[in-house]
Image (cartoon, rainbow, N blue to C red; front, top):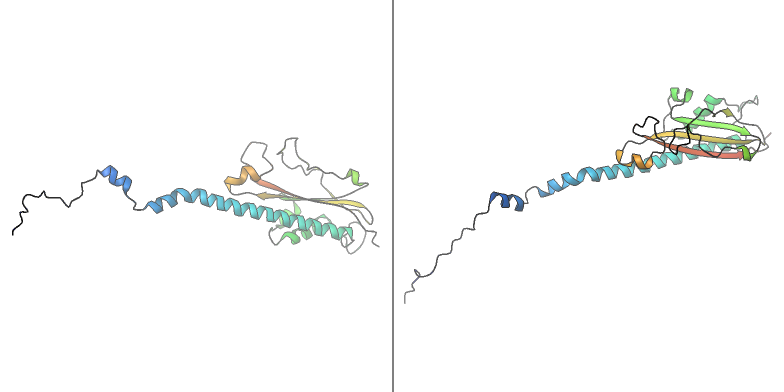
Length: 210
């Protein structure tokens, strides 16, 4: 028996053609590359912000450790000033000792040691602990006013004297994303803030060393 195929409708194997616009929106070619390009900038900004915040607070720890170390040496008489001893150090020598302590992370040039522009040290003696300053000296009453180092000096006392060692360091923040949240001093002219002011303080009474 012969079957009649002529009466059956012919089904086209060719799919209906799509418009160019629809083909464009449905195409997946290069989608991963485009998505990466969109997300890469904020992603890397966040990564850099995390790294820079970690480095800045690590530098703060380094400054704090150096302050404690030199304060301990003053307290025990390993460093003295104006006593006519071999342990006497002048201001420049003391700054050099401080820079040696932080050299693992921060480098001080000879110019910086002689004329501070980033690292400021205040080493002084007081009659009582009540007279020891507790606030950061600023150029105005503004919360983010710049540091005012005009009152800083170098005059540590001898045995049983009350002293302070204060260290201030301008750590520059590079990543724009975290500058508004980390910088704690603002230029008076309203320009972009860049510095995170690191502060470390030690107040102590010297031992009754011979």
